[in-house]
Image (cartoon, rainbow, N blue to C red; front, side, top):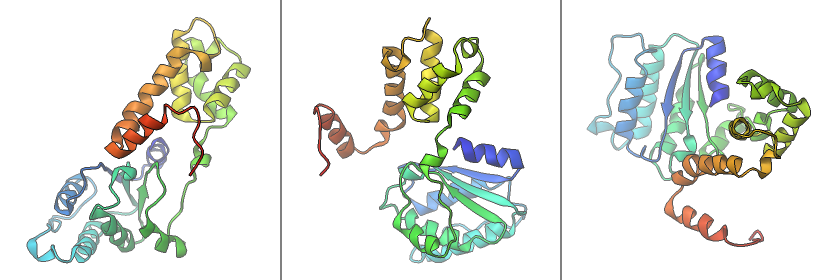
Length: 239
């Protein structure tokens, strides 16, 4: 999310940013809010089509008509960003509509799908035609130099208190994870000394809160129950 937001801002590219969630299961509601979100980009007085009854049996055609009208009224370049795509249920009727959405985009318009999970099966056809590009999660991991630079930029006094070697140890502990680095730094601010931080209960509490709020709470009940029960096991072989 941060990478794409910085990319768009640094290049001054107009963007429509749509935050998906598990409740996005109704096509009519989705297109309604998509139209509302596009008002800054859409330059024509002609209103965007609404999902009327005649299109209910042919959502693919409506999707193409909607995107054609929308993109015809947008000055390129323009970008559509769909954030938290992993929250969209695999069974959502929007999944196949995104396939039509991407297939209809004209030159000068791009779409970014931000997700913590692997792309759905409908993306395979675009990949075979070299029409999509994937950013592997490993490429988003911070290098040691980037981690040092980020901590130095944070300032607040503590950033200059410790050596590059100390920061490299933190980087190694979080394995280049940007959010983990920031959480460790927040715990570091509260520590009078570097205790090793990865053994500090305060840093563990911050990381636990992050996973609980950002990840665990968004899982369905079945996955939550599995994680809670399997956490009690001393070890668990893959099966």
